[in-house]
Length: 161
Image (cartoon, rainbow, N blue to C red; front, side, top):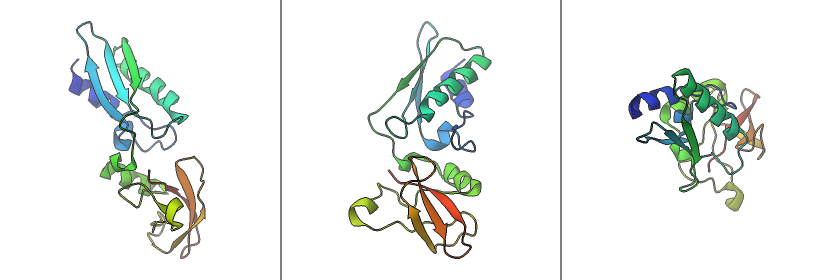
């Protein structure tokens, strides 16, 4: 099996916290190498240091490769450069919004903690921009909790970083 075929298999591995997104959508699948002995090394970058989903993602990577009869696998976490929400694909952003999570509103690190301003975030339900932050901490550490001031629904926002 060649590198592209392995990438095709891995592009189907989903994120355990947002199951509509793949590890490719999130940009955490960095590279694949196959050595002369057949060892497949998969390089992934965690969304943040200590992300609990990374253990399950590693298990799912191994399972996907084992299902394709690839059993000699190493998974390496790459911390440099650090992951950024800029790596989320456009398809991933759309999937996120359709799933009910507002994708990152900015293309770089969210400076709201420094400036005290919250980004303008789209409501995934009614698509209004008339939203406000409820809490900087949402259902997972990478999300904040917002509410729509038009449809009055609460929703998660995937924070920029």
